[in-house]
Image (tube, rainbow, N blue to C red):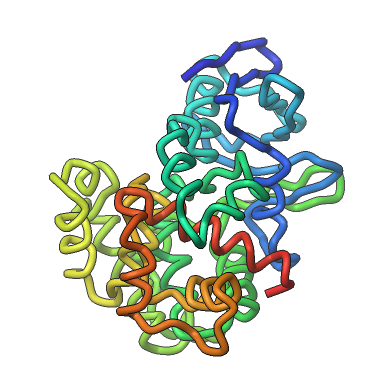
Length: 305
C-alpha cells in the first residue's frame, strides 16, 4: 500500500490503471443509496476506524487519491486503518494487466475494457454488510432492495450529521442478532428474509462466521461451501459475497440477472443466454470472472438498466 500521511489528510497513490470517475459512476448508480454520497466529484463515506466514526471525503488529482476528514480529525492509528480501507474499497492491490490482456482478445469484453478502462471492482470490506445486502436483494427488484436497505440502515445503523447531511454506518451483526423477525417484518422484510438476516447476524456475532476464517480457506470452492452451509445463503449470494468482500477475481455469480441482461445486450441476442451458453462464453475468463461480470454490469448503466 503506497500512501502518505499528511496529518489532517492522507494521500493514496493508486496504480496507473485506475479511473476514479469510472468508479464514481458505479457508486452513483442509485439515488436511493444510503451508505455513501457522491457530490461535486467527491465520495463522502462514513466508516469506523479504531472504533471511532470518521467521515471521509475522497477525491482524486492526477496522481493521488486525496482523503480529507471534514467532520473530525482521526488519530494516526485511525488514519492508517482508513488508508487500508480505501485501498481495499477500490481494489488497488490488484494488477489488472492480465485481465486486460485476456479481455482484449475476448469477443464480449474487448470493447468494454476500452470504454471503462481503469474501472475496479468496488468492494464491500465488511462481511456482514456484504451478506446482508445480498440477502436483502434476493428475489426482489433492485429499486425495492435499495428501499429496504435504507429503512434497515436508518432504523439500526449509527448516524453522523454534518452540514445538513446524514451519513450512516451499516448496522453491526451484534445489533441485528438481538432482534426478532417481527422487527424486520415491520420494515417490509418477508418473514423468511428476516429469519435469514438475523440468522447470519447470530453466526457472526457468535464468532462462528468471520471474514478472517473465510479468507483462510484453501480455495474458492471451500469458501462457497462454508457460506452455502448457512441458512439463507445460496450459490448467488455466496459468489456475490466472495466477489465483493473476499476479493476473489474468480468468483462468478453466473445466475445473476444483470449479467444475463448485459450479455444479451452485448451479443445482440433476442433472449437471455442460457447457463450453458454463459459457461461457453466465459471459458476464456478463467480467474477473472468477477471482473468480467463487473464490467458487464457497468455496461447496463449506459442503457439506464
